[in-house]
Amino acid sequence: MKVTLIDTHTHLDFADFDADRAQVLDNCLALGVQRMVVLGVYQRNWQRLWELTEANPALYAAFGMHPVYIDEHRTAHLNELGDWLTRLKGHPQLCGVGEIGLDYYVEQPDRARQQALFDAQLQLANDFNLPALLHVRRSHADVIATLKRHRPKRSGIIHAFAGSREEAR
Image (cartoon, rainbow, N blue to C red; front, top):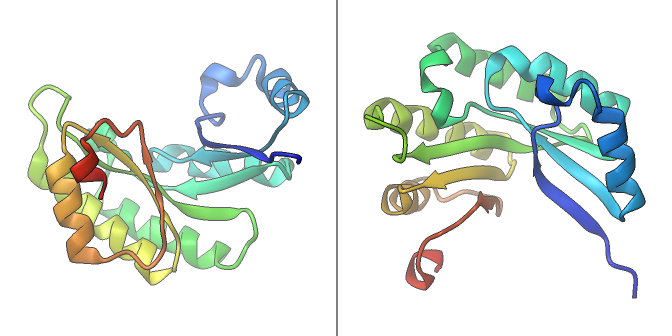
């Protein structure tokens, strides 16, 4: 039986990969990773993320605003996120809204602002019938409560889940 490997969490759009991105992609494919999801974390990289995805059929894009970069996010970026999702609706390489969520590990997290951004992006995931690709760090209870409120239409992925068995249910 042949196994299809999918890396559900990459940031290949980051400048850190500029020098060896092609080699990294080639190595992944050679090792049997057939698909990779590139998650957006801030508005300034969405164009780069999409150009990278379009250039390689093994890549799939998710657009979002990561809670760690909360100071970079602007209200207008939510509108732009909606525009990207509208423009790419139905495209086979658009696979989700992410990386989104709550991060209470950072020093003095702006919980209210993170929550508002998370709510808005979950709503977009529902509006466009896309999975949410979640970042959850020291915020399990609030993320669970938010998911219960929004009742996502599609299953998603929680990155680096470190909660309990009960929280996973």
